[in-house]
Image (spheres, rainbow, N blue to C red):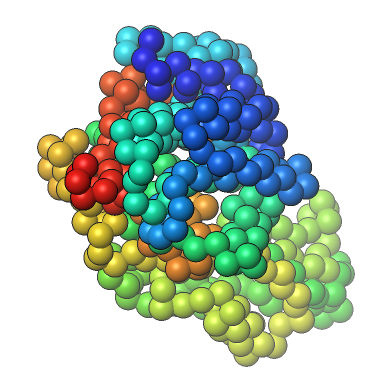
Length: 380
């Protein structure tokens, strides 16, 4: 069994459902300490974060990942135990196999190989792991980033190991992400009997025109490689459980995925202005998941494009699609951020998996990227 496959299996066997790290970071820290990395554990609340560094000064290159996984769901739905890694027909199965214990293991192996080959490399190579990426992401990288900002820790480049490839390893390079803003809107009316609507105010009827305007609005035409900003209603709830009662309140949940044309405060103000125009009696609670970020052309993006093209046999698609990642907390520190990882077809699913061939290629992919950015000229 190869080094990266062995480590991935060790990580999968630890049931680190958010926010429980289940000892994953201690395992990684011990290996990196033996390789000469300085180790700092940063625990906030129930969340474990690991900051491991080798070298000093600029440029600072961070390998960013998470050790937590989503719950496996019913164990009987899996072909084998989700926390007992198993290889079948050249494929490794287990919760976290793709998202993202394979990426974490590949980071560790690549980092070990890099410092062994280049002990006096330029700048700083760092690994940042959290156990709060799949959850609320409050005490994970978001909190670590605030700590870094307060103490003046700089980051120049960040590579996130999230599963980004679509069909083959290296066919997609994530160069940005949309912002994400969620809302819970409560519209207040007056409860009453459906036979006497004049004695009530139906909050569903009151909210409907405003919701129709929100959904129909064209927020922008996109930005660079970003698709246009979109608003999606995810839930509408009202009623008392009786079919002859006009409810007193209606609750609507929606989410905005937005381009760099916008930021959260401006979007919140736009939505509030629209609701006010419709004269609604309402309350709205916002959750700011993260602002959009975009990495323009530069050393990081160019190096990644060249390395991925060699691995995939063709230049990668350079995309800003998909959901969000913890890079959204690192980008505001001034870092250029990209995302590279294994195929994402099975993430969060029953029988999550990664091809062993892809897994064993991943450390070399990351190693080549790190060498292009930090290896001294004489060794490049």
